[in-house]
Length: 250
Image (cartoon, rainbow, N blue to C red):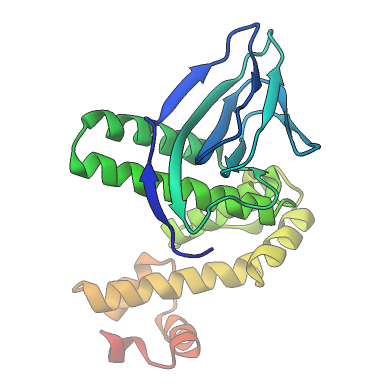
C-alpha cells in the first residue's frame, strides 16, 4: 500500500439496519468504509456478490454503486464512514474478511469515541484508526486463505513472546489452538518458518537481550528468569543467535 492522505467526510457511525432495510447506493463521490460487526446479508458490486457476516469489510471508491440486503431476523450491524483519500484507498476486490474481530471492534469504537470528542487529537485518532482499518481490509483482500486457526496460531506465538520464561510444551500450545500436535506444528512452521520450539528459543534470547541491556540483572539472573537451569547452555544459545556472549551485552 502507498502512504495515504485521508480526510474524514462523515462521522464514524454504527447502525443496526431496520428489518425492512435494503441498500441501493447512489454513485459514490468519495470513499466509504463499510464493516459488518454482526448479522447476515449479501452485498453486490459490479456483478460480484459477497455474503455478509461478522468481519466482512469493504472500502468503496468514488464511482462505486454498491447494493445490499440482509436477513431481517439477523439484522446487520454496520460501522462505517465516508472519507477522501489520496491516492485512492480501495482494494481490488473491494472487500475482505478481517479475522481479528476483536481488533476490528476496538478500532470502530475508538474511531467513534475519538470523533465525538471534537478536538484536534480526536480527529487525528480517527484518521489513524481509519488507516489501520484500511490496512486490515487490504491484507484480508490479498490474503483470503487465512482462517480462524491461523489467528489461533498467531495468538500462541504472541503468548510465547509475552512470557518466554514459562515452561511451554508443544502439546500445550496445540491444545490452546484447538489443533492436534501435528496440525499445530505444521501450521506454525508455515506461518513463521520455524518450529514452535525454535520460536520459543528465539523469543527467550530476544527477551534476554532486553533484560541484559536495559536492566541491572546479571547473566545468571537473566538465565533463571527465562527458564534456564544451565547458565553455560544459555550462554551458548545466546551467542549462537546474537554473535555475542551475554556478558558482552550486559
